[in-house]
Image (cartoon, rainbow, N blue to C red; front, side, top):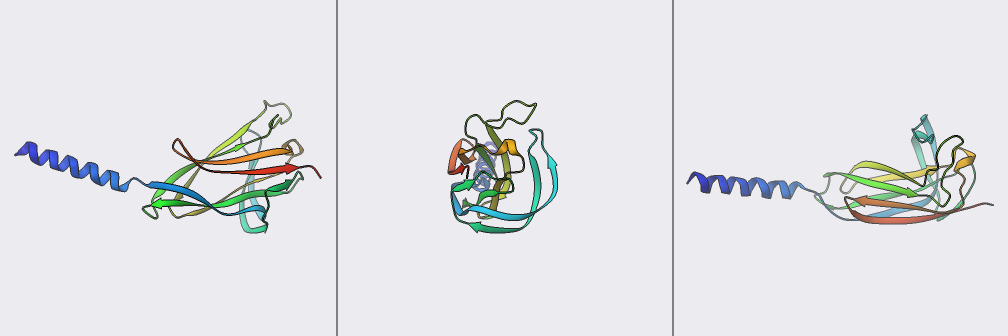
Length: 163
């Protein structure tokens, strides 16, 4: 009888753990394009890229064509779709840069940027890149990918152009 009770308890615990694991169906694009925002608390990361907090975020234009100009910020808002609603998830995002990648003076070339966002199922997040330094102004396709585990759930290409 103890074995049967133990097996039933193990089955119940396993089923409960499975039920709590988020099931991600997809990631939807809410909006994309060029944005404006107020930047605060700016600091350079290990790659030399300026990272800032943002407030007063405003969607300025829906476009996938981005001018290679200092001060331009582009990206998208996305929503995680799945179950259960509100469950915490980590979404990996990767910016794949055009060849030859970034070449900050005195540093090795960077060909992609990878970060992990903590969000929730049903939650909406904003992801962007802003041109702060001349060495970031690389024309060509900038591909933004979103991954959950080993599944790529969304890809959006922005084409950066010189004007």
